[in-house]
Image (cartoon, rainbow, N blue to C red; front, side):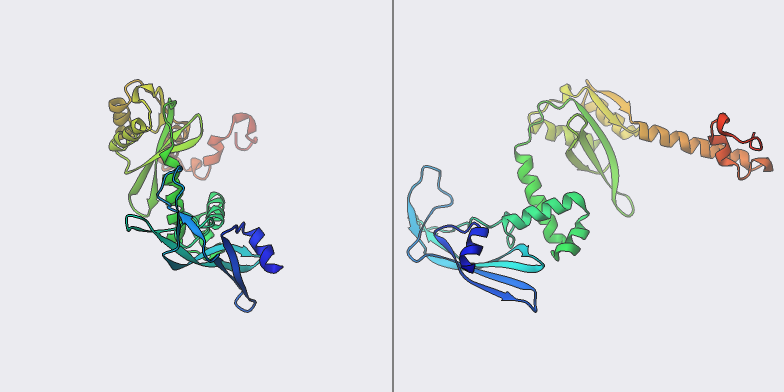
Length: 285
């Protein structure tokens, strides 16, 4: 009864079956052994959809996958996975229906990792799941690359670009964003004009057109301006509000510091000058 319940919950279908279930309350761990029926045949994983030939198992490989927790208990699936020997003598491992794209995880567990990473930093996901940062990044990298394969940039016309630091010191990356769809298009290493060259190359590989880019929002970096003018000739540059306000605030602070150094009456009154006159008290006026 329990075996049938887990078989349905895990969507284990013929020729696969659950052989045994081992629950260890002290270690808070559930191990499920999966096998295939004797005499089962399998299709060549490299064959096309029209290939109907089936092969019996040539030998097996023991594999383990981390699955979604069973309540607060860690759950792992174990199976002897068949390999087939094709007519040309080549041996192929049969993919299981529950395995993910990265070795050692089920598809559902990888889906959980991705959803968690949307809501929190990777190191927090690592603490929560017990999976190392390195393995989580492997999952993310794998699915990002798969998602990028089918990207179509033919309708891209309005982009934003900005640099950010990814580590202490001067290790920068530049992000290119579709401002209409509000999604990241590309990330380039560095923050010079070559990042724009890199983006345009990717844009055109994805059916985009550099001449179709009509609007670019960026900061006042000479490198960015140079990159846009040389590589997206039809684009009009708009300096983003955040950087303009930042420069204005820095200029106001600089003037305040310079003027505050000689008339003592100005010292400690920075915020008075930032208020609207109508909001000043009689003393402040």
